[in-house]
Amino acid sequence: MNSILNYARKEVTPPKKLREKKQRVAKKACDLVSQCIEKYAQVVGFELGGSYAKGTWLPEKADIDIFVKFNKKTSEKDFRDVGTKIGFQSLKKYKPYTRHAEHPFVEAIIEGTRINIVPCYDVNKGEWQSATDRSIYHTKFMSQKLSDSLKVEVRILKKFFLHIDVYGAEIAKEGFSGYVSEVLISYFGSFEKTIKKISELKKGQIIGKSTKKFDSPIVIIDPVDTNRNLGTAISMDNLGKFVLASRVFLKKPSKKFFK
Image (cartoon, rainbow, N blue to C red):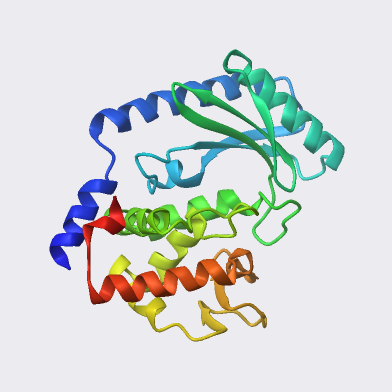
């Protein structure tokens, strides 16, 4: 097991050259957003978020998410319209296009790296006005919670999810998001402990603590918002794949799970 996990650690750690490139691209994108938001009174600032900001990105999956923070009194129409406008204006050199989640956001590719410019409201914890408002709190929480060694464990888990084809929270995938990977490692403490727990999973098991009752095959409490169950987005099929793959790996560890 140890030799396999050591191999996985090497596989998931981005090389220095790639880290420097991503840093350069992130700075370029942040500079463009910074110049653009000056003319919008509704905008109070922006922050880097997602796996890049948290240091849990995989070499082959390094999107850069920039969250543009809107004053909480901004109307939903302005939130959508101005948010999209900022994305298009700041990324205009890079053929930007709109993507849709609960609210539209803008995406473009800079030097082979996907950049997402996402609007969110500048609110206090728990006073959420849009689905993206928690993201900045997720970044802060994980930046404090995850040591460098735990970040590597998150990357190993993400790689495992990719190999068994259950990685991604989008509706078409109904899998395990990058944030869920971080939450599982923060709760259990390592990749190995996580898959041991999952291999013994009981239906409706609760991971984390909440006073609220949830009904889904797995309940994973968001540590930033204990009224939220991250497990609702995960399909029964993908959960089953994770349980079975965990059992297989524990019985017969193999490098193939990280290729």
